[in-house]
Each structure stands twice: as C-alpha cells, then as structure tokens.
Length: 203
Image (tube, rainbow, N blue to C red; front, side, top):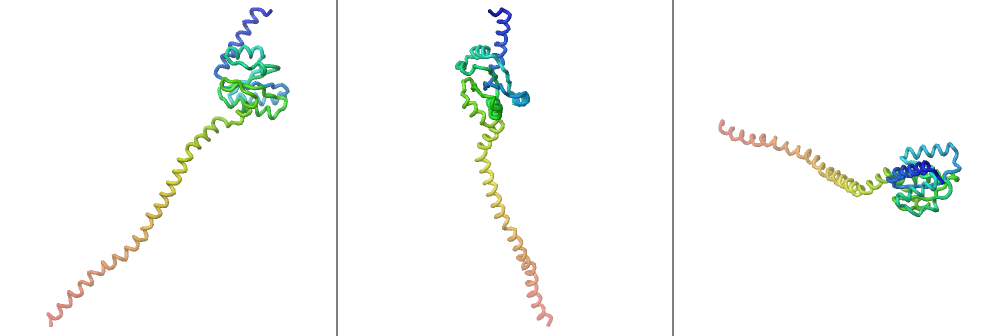
C-alpha cells in the first residue's frame, strides 16, 4: 500500500496538472514511442514555438486529472504509453502532432479533446487541416471585405471614366480662342465708316 507521502505527492501532481489543463482548448493524445532523439527534439521545439505544451504522463494520473476536469470517455485512449499535447490555441496541437504523425510512422495519434468534448482520431486530423488563426482571420476578413473592395474598384472605374469625359471640354476651350479674334477685329471695322463721311466735308 502506498505511503501517505507517495499519495500526497501523487495528489499534488494531479492538482498541478488540473491547474495546467483547465484553460486548454485542445488536447491531443499520442503514442510517441519510436521517434529518434533528433525527431523528438525537433517536434518538441516546434510545439514550444507554437505555444503547445507536451508531456508524457502515466495513464492512471491522466484518468484522475480528467475526472477532476469532468471529462469522461477516455479509458480506451489511456492504454499503453501516452503523451499529451495541449494548448489554449485550438488548432496548434492538432496541426503539429498530425504533421509528425504523418511523417514518422511509429508516432500514432490516439484521440483527443476539442473544446471540452472527446474527439476521435479523424476529428483531430480534420482539425489539423484548418488554417492557423492568422491565416484563417485573413481569409475571413478578405471574405467580408471583398464585396466592399469590389465596390470600391467599380466606383473608382466610374470616377475615372467620368473624369475622362469631363476632361473632353479641354479641346473646346482651345476652340474658343479663335472666337476672340473677330472681337479684336470688330473695332477696326467700325472705325472705317467713321472716316468716309469726313472726306466730302473737306471738298
């Protein structure tokens, strides 16, 4: 029978994991045996960069932790060596783990939890194919803004066409220049008759 010291230590481990797990959105359970040191190191580095925690935990401890978290239906998953990748970001754990599971045959996804619900292997793989938040956000924003962008382009095209049409009077302005020439010659035409009556008076 375990001593009180061992039981207390185990209880503390469970409490610490409960505190660490409670804010996570996604858990991916994996049998990571068979990876080389180099492969395991590369995977763990990418997980850290993606803000994903990764731990190998005893199944008995995992059962107690998720019992505390109120999540059931994991008994079939917690068989054999189990590692868990988890994060507050929904997509990241599935995306990174699925990448390495596909690349290295010994690594096997056992299932997971997505937003508090037990997920199958297929559901984890499907989740892994969703774009990362930044890409997804960009796609959503583009989708929302596309009609406005298209409208803006249309308005711009109409404005440019109208500007071209409004610019057409420029040649008309040049055509008005000759009209001023007769106006300058008009006074000369009026002065000529004024000199002709003066000749008979001198005679």
